[in-house]
Image (tube, rainbow, N blue to C red; front, side, top):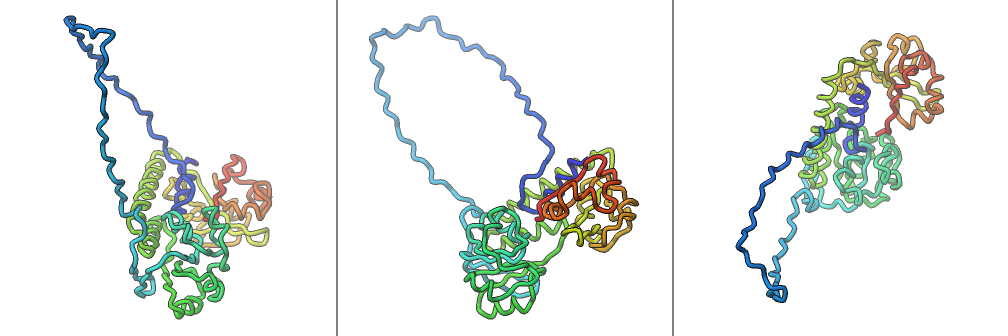
Length: 329
């Protein structure tokens, strides 16, 4: 069951590392019936001294490789209606500035990472993004920092801001695409399509969506076969002073339920996305698995530090060692 839980959680990043999926059954080769080929007994062998006629190879022309539209490069200009109802025309993607970490991951998955010149500090995946210049945190951006990168297009979602900063960038003539920010499993496909359309590679976007939805379908099928439903809870940590249990209004609730687990937030009756971590609340849930972010885990001293947090050491998750940590994206 932990396999299904880990697999679906790994799929939500839309372009992250390969997630574990059920291994296909081994292929069974069907042997072809052995048919003896009769050799005519009247055949006269060629004399040993016979010189075979020269063989002249007729060159076969090699067909020109045909590129599918998704591999042929961006089709520009691209026209898109963003979340504000604005019609944005993008005619140059040679210098892309991305405002949010999840959108950065999608841009790289579309094969356009070589055009990205700057990202925000929440862009932790793929690793190449971490080496790019930073424009600050997605919610507290500055027009000067973004414009200093000489962008030909700026793209992000509703979490980016402040809104006045984006208006200042638009006023200079740089196209700014703002996409909807919706953290659900189904919204991942819409996000990919929106980024792909904005950057002129809609066919590539559809290919990635098909791949993602097939993988999610495989994980749902795996979860449906489970005989048990472990309880899982998501803890958010940023040092000892920032410890939260995550509630039902956060995407982790949907992920747990879809992967065949019982959401610890539902067991505890916690609806808000973030509530302070209290030992009594965690004890009431007594989760079989605890899910955390890798960077957050490091801020409390790794797994050993996590086990010392209020109530964590007394859970079944601690006893069974079911602590799953994932990259922040």
